[in-house]
Length: 371
Image (cartoon, rainbow, N blue to C red; front, top):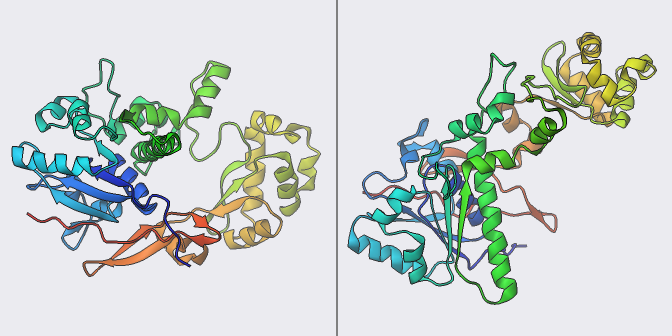
């Protein structure tokens, strides 16, 4: 059975670069949209030079630009600009992440684009939004992780803060951008009369939008949440534990889990310990409980614990490296193995099933750079 993708017939003109915009349009393309990527003819998307390389191509660029066609346009050139406007007339969405100061020079301001297509969804991704004193400043993921407060809770302690390993703010923004585009496409479809709309997705706001319970904690306590490594500030035990051989993650999120966990590890006595009767008490008495559990968990190897916990429905998982993921058939089925221009590449699949059949999202290789 071939699944009809829901965005077939939707055309997106994508002049964005780096990660947030290209991730957004890759998601739309996985759902069936036709994407035409606009790149500078001299250098292309700057991520084409990001390390590491697969052959002569950037694995970074390849990872977020599948299912796209490409057109190379110098938007400072009037002839190429007119070619862009011809594409605008045939598109449902136009997206870019140029700074406001550059829009005018390249001829891609909202008013200009709207004059070519009165129904276009005009979408920008910016660092700080299009209004306010910082609207013209560039925004990058690592800056947003710092400025949003996300980095202040990431790491072992306040002296050992860390960037989230993935470019998570860019990805958040890409998801939020795609969701907003879909909402306006749906709105126009329902009303039978779509009008042009100007949308902007700021990285800083996307970072904040991803942190609701951290702001809730600050509102409740008046205290800044602090980094506590891989543990959880409000749930105990909800962290990694060392076993005889490897580290295992435990997520005891409620009292039902707590009862199953204590029974599984052979410590029913902890269920009667007044210090640990509720999650609130376990958080309060974290310093007494964790050493007890640490000693217990060292009695077996990780695989032994995993087998037991999965049998008794205790939430637990290994801490995998990518190589471990690719050896686990149950997880690796969500990753495509592809040869792109003769080189091996891995692409996480769109993890959506329709009527119990997974959407097959890979239709064409990422576009090559042609000078």
